[in-house]
Image (cartoon, rainbow, N blue to C red; front, side, top):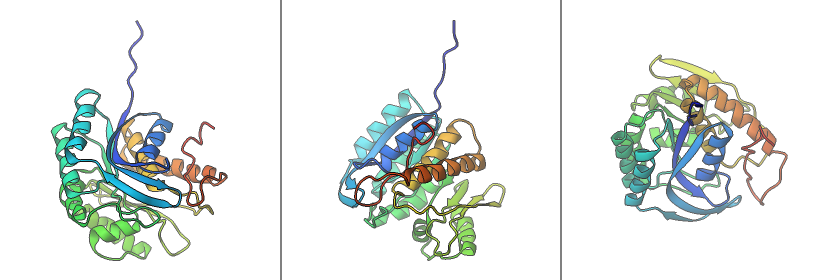
Length: 271
């Protein structure tokens, strides 16, 4: 009798993007493209396309809890990626649920605004993220604006990125990846700080001339979670995911979809 196969399972807790380029939709595409079984807990429904967000419908906290318990009590997961959480109440509920089910390998992408500038969280949620979720995370993956909001200061240079990563790690997470795509200089290097080793890794990046960059943060964090679900340690998971997202941006740059910022090509290894 053949031995039963086992999926590497990744749960994404995030908002839905009706345009398909970011949020839950991007997460599930990425998880599948990286060889894992994806599941979802939807925290908000957004009406959006390549031009921006035109509406947000927040999922009630009790139904977020019901989704989380339904998935984790039966299927379980090998890693979780957390994206958009609209309110402090949602954040506390998710944190309590993850602890209740003993979830490990947590990647937190602290989504605060859409790329087009629309605010996606309440102000109180920032405080709750710092208190309830960041201390549970094995890795957090803020971009420069998100790291600036979490720390209450403006980050503008590569040196300041390193200092910010160390300070964010002081909130209790295992590692911090600050993405350098918003640097005003020509560089877009990422900074990974591994708190347990007190070690910083600079991950060089190159800019791709394209407007198809919607959902890059969601895609990167989901790819990292997928790699961790398959057994990679944080640094190796981040390096592999960075290769994936870079190739997805390059491949996606050849396409035209919508009138604004299009998506990356999540399935570039296959077609």
